[in-house]
Amino acid sequence: MINDRNKTNLALENIFGELENMINGATRMPLMDKLLIEENELINLLDDLREAIPKEVKNADRVLEEQKQIVNKAYADAEMIVQQAKSEAERIVGAAQAKADEMVKQEEIVKQAEAVAEELKANALAYEEETKKSADEYAIRVKQDSLTYADDMLAYIGETMHSALQGLTDNRHNVKREMDVVSGLTQPEEDLLPPQE
Image (cartoon, rainbow, N blue to C red; front, top):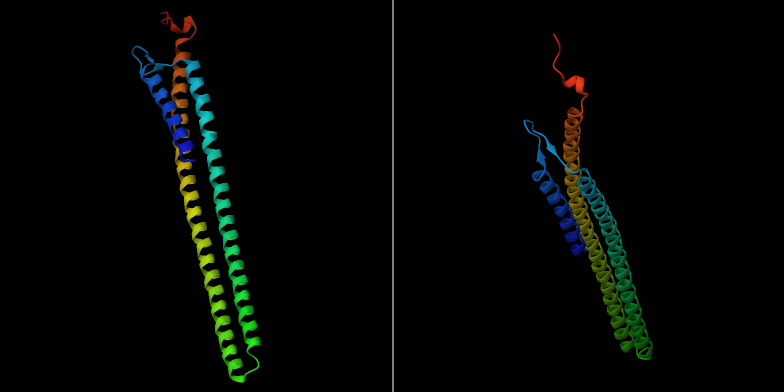
């Protein structure tokens, strides 16, 4: 994804570089602060710019989708960890209970077995709770990281699009000025004649 973003940045830089070269290489009108720019070349550059900008929009959609997948996977992993902890706790409690049943014949042994079972049960429940807490913290941390990354990407894309749109606005003003120059050069001949006394 970073590689695609770098390619898009390079494409935009190339387009703006070509626009700058076009302006620098344009023919300057004598006695005027105006330039003549080749219309077809300008249209081609604008088409390239239109093609590059939607790639940034697609990249933003992909970032959001990846963020969603990361969060969903984190929650799925957390749920799996909790289920495993619960199964392990049940297994431990079951084993402790079975052991206590075997020792039921003797009162002292029964008491010891109950104490062991309770301790194992408490440990299993504590283990389950600790594992669930760790899994929840992990899921939240992953979600926060992915949201921060998505926010950074969207901010970067917004800045890139803002810069591109500003360039388009500037170029449009330049084209309008050139159109005004051309319109001024194509006045009817009688408008160019000096007034008769």
